[in-house]
Image 1 (tube, rainbow, N blue to C red):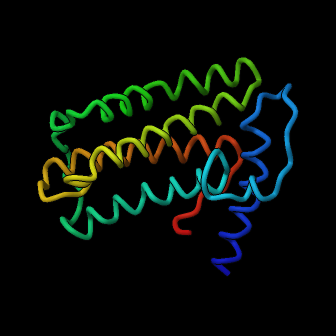
Image 2: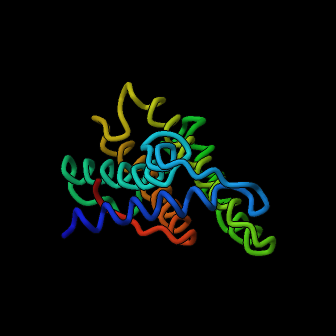
Length: 167
């Protein structure tokens, strides 16, 4: 039953995201292979990013236990971390502009951009990991990842996609 729900959520999400990533006046290319891909600018990829962000958080909890109430965010010193923080802060403005202009593609483009930021961050932290040997730094990074996941989830939900916790 869960697999059926996930499959439906991913399939419907693929069609919805494909339609909403284009400006409302643009022609939409309907290509199943492109739409259902787990790479590129697709609904399945966006849901995968949401799941991946959650798995990083679970990894922290498995290794260190519950998140500290107030992680030391001064430990976030990478340029990618600053970029993610700026992007998170821009979310309300993007949503307001999308509503004012009746243009959901603004939210889609924003979500694609923050997913790209996360991918860049993932690469930048490969050496010591988002969840690494330094518990305090890992906690700060997980707080950032959790905030990014929340924004990604809210954006996908605004577009009409159903979130899944695993794929």
